[in-house]
Image 1 (cartoon, rainbow, N blue to C red):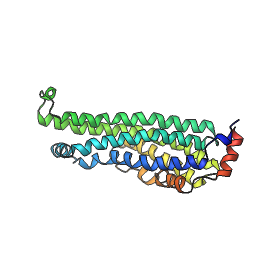
Image 2: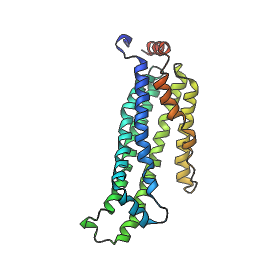
Image 3: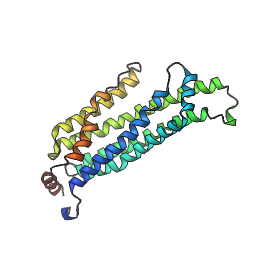
Image 4: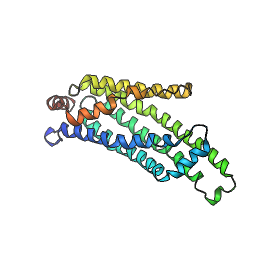
Length: 238
């Protein structure tokens, strides 16, 4: 049986998860969004010039994206401790989906490194003209975008078990669980429309993701959980 006297308070897990969420999310968001501001559609020369003029920030955005993903590792493990009393199987699924999505997202950043290498002026690139090298940069930026949309499969999938666990927990408001599940559908719709209708152009998760961020982390950080109910669920699941 679980010895609750040696278990950390659920408020510790809740506030740690909320804090980790609020730390990781801005890094991930900056890494995802900054580079798109340098892209001028249809103008490869200006795009290349913008990247090289802001190379330090371009590199920082890559680092920021990677930090954001690494930050999700302790986050999902803390959430596992917080939500495991509801249903261990669903909590394990939540962890698996997140831990699969992290390397997929991180590997997509290789395409940003490739764009930098094309513009680096390295000797082994002299076989290609400057125009040819610049024309390849948008290709790798697009490949990175495609990689992110593939990762969104797992960004969506992990929200389904997490939303279910929150909804069934009794120690976190049910509405947050509903919003998390809606957010999961948003990511899945984004992936499907990107594949089937590449010119659709509307990011659905931008409208459905409010439950995942900022509502859920702020609730965990500020309000925490109902400790009495959590302890009861922990005893029942032991």
